[in-house]
Length: 233
Image 1: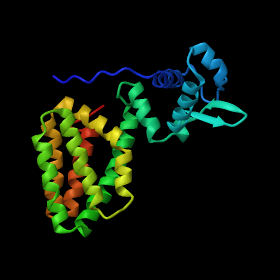
Image 2: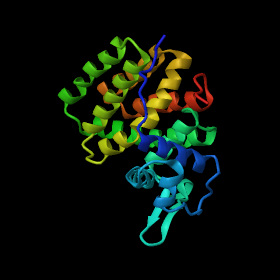
Image 3: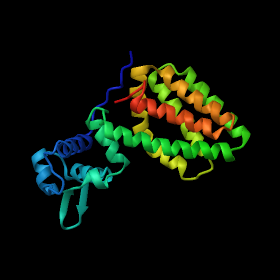
């Protein structure tokens, strides 16, 4: 049984959580204007520095729009949000997403993985491909779900690096919080060995430089997660 480390939130983190939860619960609708910093500071009994820093972070997460001399407004985060917005929504819902959201995430993963494996198979040096084997062994040797997920991400990120596409690793990094949460859910349901099997399948296809086999491996894994034997809804 695994237990997570406990830590106390700072005042700024508590402020961010409260405002974000009020937005996601609908108590602060899109387009509504928040009270001035001075008023919030008085109501919540925290410094204006806490309010100001919290506003800045919530703007970064896509939940607020800040306009000088006009005020702070709840942003249309569903339309104009970013990867930080998605991560925050996952946290709010206890790391559970709806079917349509998971489907959209996995379809993006499908496209990215096809692009990465195609490029690796066509362009990567033999030593780079063989270097993936060490990361595969880390997945196999992992003692916990967290270690398995971390090693799996390292494998996929390295795959993106040796693809030769300079933007691909940045995209993979931006998706790390989302995909790792889904992998954790997958492991809790089907075991970390099942995640290892998916990485092993992909590695074998890449090692053999078989583009079609790599695509079939990716498609089977994602189709199973969406509608097959290993659904993660």
